[in-house]
Amino acid sequence: MDAQREVWSARSVFILAAIGSAVGLGNIWRFPYVAYTNGGGAFIIPYLVALLTAGIPLLFFDYAIGHKFRASPPLAFRRISRWAEGLGWWQVGICFVIAVYYAVIIAWAARYAIFSIGEAWGDDPEGFLFGTFLQQEDSARVGFDLVPGVAITLLLIWIATLVVLAFGVQRGIGSSARIFVPLLVVLFLALVVRALFLDGAVEGLNAFFQPDWSILTNPTVWIAAYGQIFFSLSIAFGIMITYASYLRLKTNMTSSGLVVAFSNSSFEILAGIGVFAALGYMAAAAAVPIDEVVGGGIGLAFIAFPQIISAMPGGSIFGAVFFTCLVFAGFTSLISIVQVVIAAVEDKLGMSRLAAVAIVGGSMTVISMALFPTTTGVGVLDVVDKFVNNLGIVGVALVAIVSVIWFLRQGPAFVEHLNAVSSFRLGIVWRICIGVATPVVLAYMLVSEMITLVQDGYEGYPASFVLGLGWAVQGLLIVVAIVLSLTPWRQGTDLAAPDAT
Ligand code: PHE
Ligand code: NA
Image 1: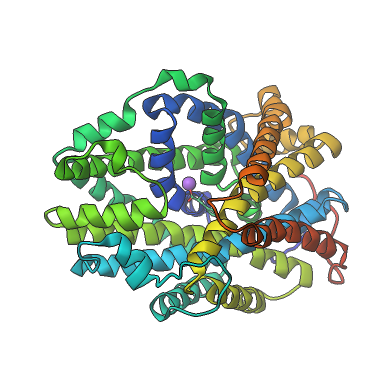
Image 2: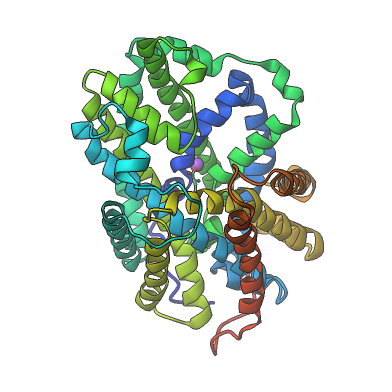
C-alpha cells in the first residue's frame, strides 16, 4: 500500500469535506424548484424513497470502493479488475467537464454579491443579467469573445481553488471545509430566518408544502426525485471514492455516510423554506400568484432574487449574503470535483501533488476561461450541463454498478469491508437496493432521457450545437476513458488490492 497517501486528520474533517461537496448550488436553487413542481409537500415521499433506496446505498457503494481500494477512481477500479479501470477514467472525465463550467456559476455569484450592494440591475434584472453583465449574443455557437468582467472573476475563482488544492487533502481541502461549511450554515440560517419574517412568507410556504398526492402515481415525479438525489449527493462520479480513500483504515464508514446524507437533505429542505418564504414575499409585493414567480436555476438566483432584493427593505445586505452563500456552497463543491482529477493524475503518472495541481489546474483553467466567460458561454454551459447531468452521471453510475456488483460480484466483499469498521451494518437490504432497485431506476432514467433528447432536442438549440456539445462530448469521455485505461501505469504502482482491514 502507498505509505505516503494523504489522510484526513480526523473523521470529522472528512465528514465536513463531504458535506461541503454535497451541499452546493443544487441544494439552493435546484431542490426548491424541483420539489415545488413535483407535488410540493407530497414530493417528500418519492424524495425519501429515492434517498433511502438509491442515494444512501450508492453513497455506501462509493465509500466501499474508495476506502477498501484506497485510491483515486482509476486506480481503485483497476484494483478491482484490470477491465474496470476505464470506469474510473469516465468518472474523472465527468468531473473535468463539470468543473470547467461549475466554476463559472460561482464567478457569477461572486459578482452578484457585489452587485447586490448597489442593486446594480436597476429595474431590469433580466436585461442586466444577459445584456449588461453577461453580454450574450443571440446565436447558439461556440465563440471565444471574452467578457472581461466575468473572465477576471473566473480567473480569481480558479486561482483560489488551485491554491486550496495545492495545500493538499488535510491542510487545503479539510481546512477550507472547516471554515466554509460552518460559515455557510450560519449565514444561510440567518437568511432563512430573515425571509420568514417577510410579509407573504406564510403564503410562500403554503404553496411550497401544499401536497398534491395525485403525483404519487406519476413516473416523471419519481424520476425527478431520483435525479435530485443523485445530483445532490454527488454520488457515483468519483468524488466520494476519492474522499473516502483518504480515511484511515479504522473508520466508521456507514454512520459517516448517514451524517452526510441527512445533512445534505436537511440543508435542501432549509433552502426550500428560505427560497419559498422569499418568493411568497415577492408574490405578495407584486400581487401576482406564486406560480408566476417560481423558476429554477439561473432564473431563480440571478433574476428572481434580484427582484426580491430590490423590493425588500435592507435588501442589499440580504442579497450580498445570499450570493455569498452561493459562492461558499459552490466553492467547496468545486474543490471536490477538481480533486478527483488531480488524484487520478497523481496516481497514474506518479506525480507530486504540486505538479498534478499545476497540470490539471492549468488545463482546466484554460478550457474554462476559453469557453464560458464569453459572449456565447451561457448556451454552451446550458447544453453541456444538461447532457453531463442527465446522461453522463446516470450512465456511469449504471455501468459501474452493473460491472462491479453484477459481473465482478463485489457486493459481499463490500458488505464485509464496511461492516468490519462501521457501527451501522449492511446486509440484504443494501444488496437489494444496490443490486436491483438502483440499476433498474438508473436504466429507466437513462433510456427515457435519451429518447426525449433524440425526439425533442434540447430547449430549441440547433441540432448541430446539441450534437457537438451534448452527445459528442459525452461520447468522447467514454472513448478517452477507454484509451487512458489502456496506457501503462507508472513503474512500481501497486495494482493489487491493499490488505484487508
Ligand atoms: N451536489 C452538488 C449540489 O447539490 C452538486 C455537485 C455537482 C457537486 C458536481 C459536486 C460536483 O449542488
Ligand atoms: Na447537494
